[in-house]
Amino acid sequence: MRRAVELAERGRATTLPNPVVGAVVLDPDGNPVGEGWHERAGGPHAEVRALQAAGERAWGATLVVTLEPCAHTGRTGPCVDAIVAAGVRRVVLAVPDPTELAGGGAERLRAAGIEVESGLLAEQAEEGNEPWLVATRLRRVFVTWKLATTLDGRAAAADGTSRWITGDAARADVHRLRAECDAIAVGVGTVLADDPWLTVRDAGGDLAERQPLRVVVDSRGRTPAGARVRDAAAATWLATAEKVGAGPTGQVDLRRLVDRLYADGRRHLFLEGGPRLAGGFVATGLVDRVVAYVAPALLGSGPSVLAEAGIASIAGIRRLEITDVTRLGPDLRVTARPARPG
Ligand SMILES: NC(=O)c1ccc[n+]([C@@H]2O[C@H](COP(=O)([O-])OP(=O)(O)OC[C@H]3O[C@@H](n4cnc5c(N)ncnc54)[C@H](OP(=O)(O)O)[C@@H]3O)[C@@H](O)[C@H]2O)c1
Image (cartoon, rainbow, N blue to C red; front, side, top):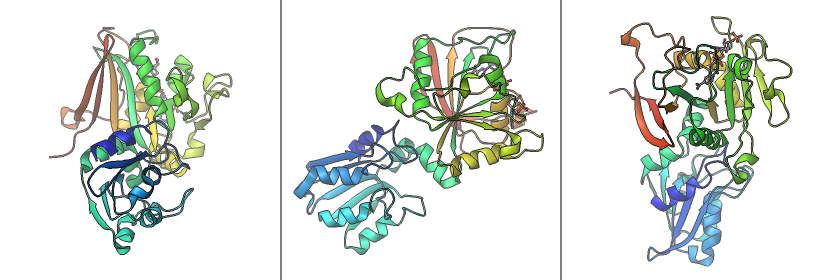
């Protein structure tokens, strides 16, 4: 299963809106005879690739897979049929499939006389698929908020300039993370201040092939006609209050926004600020992961990286738990998620 989790990783930047999945076929003596991973939506599933690689050696074998095999016909046929047809004797899976449409695979395998074991290395497999699993369960996009800050928590200087707080390695890393998402959002304030492109660049090779949808959260439609986000490099959606609906402040209703993006087939939103839009997301409890690039630099004045998050007292502090700390050139990347109660 450890190997299957590793294989799943290979699809990280290409499978959305599908999950990452890895699979290994073991012959009756426990020797690996086939491997596979899901590469892109519409392409063969991991199990099918692993079974193809194993060929006749799949007969009587054990299939180890990170996600419950699907039971439905989507763009490809049901994996359970391929598993039964290959003569597999036992299936070991890490995480059940939460979707109504594709779920129920384990039950169908059992009905066909195949031994099924569920939950092996579930935590590791869940972690690799967290955005897809959370999005599927909540029926809204998973939100990763990315920020770049000085050590004193500033997002920009007093005159509004903010390029660049972090170094080359951190900025290249942002492009890699953008490529793992299928939508990128900023508030209109960032478009007016920085005029960003919000495209995946210098992520290397085919990572840049599939550009995420660019979303500008812009209640009153203030995005200038000549803004770079309106160019032809990627699709752009101007999320106005008229199109999405307005919350109590008259601004774009962020809950409806994340639901709408899910309904549109998106699963992982990369929120790139700025401070006020991030504040709106934090206030509504819609941030699932924080990726903070911290530069060893000081500004002393200028906007804080998070504004108006609706927290008035220390009792309302939003605690996070750190899941990773990585050094990128002179900077640090801190990844965290909301602390789980208890
Ligand atoms: N260091 C970093 O990580 C980073 C990242 C991005 C930007 N920045 C800097 O941040 C500055 C811009 O800050 P900003 O706060 O004005 O930009 P912002 O957060 O990108 O945009 C804020 C605007 O988003 C719109 N919005 C629509 N619905 C909203 C909602 N429900 N909640 C909150 N906002 C909503 C509002 O304008 P309407 O009411 O008109 O819709 C609001 O004024 C620039 O200097 C930029 O360089 C820094």
